[in-house]
Image 1 (cartoon, rainbow, N blue to C red):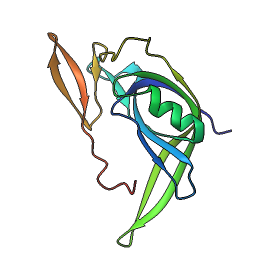
Image 2: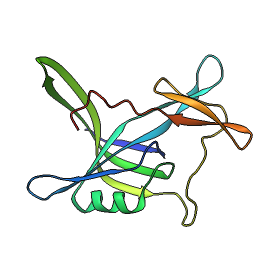
Image 3: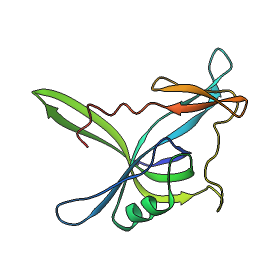
Image 4: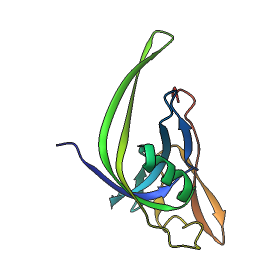
Length: 143
């Protein structure tokens, strides 16, 4: 069985594109909190890449944006590709269902208190508290 269920906030806007055959594909990344704290008592997060296809991709691009909360159900997929003779592996979640969890009229939800990034993010002071601000580092991905 290969099934993944995630709830988190988008770390950047959805990227919508179309394949040469006209199929919509949406790509986005969630910040999904872990259920436990680290040795310093801080909660860490993982940042899985999500792929949605066809009508689901179009709906994700229409209703999701950076900071919005979503629930994703899908399957884990690992791909291999080569860049300049070097093999690269990509692990991502192919979504079969996406629930839009941010209430209407609410644009973003701040990161919860005690939220600690696991690399690839930095903290920014906003409204008197620290909020997580992800750093986009997809430079070596082919898409």
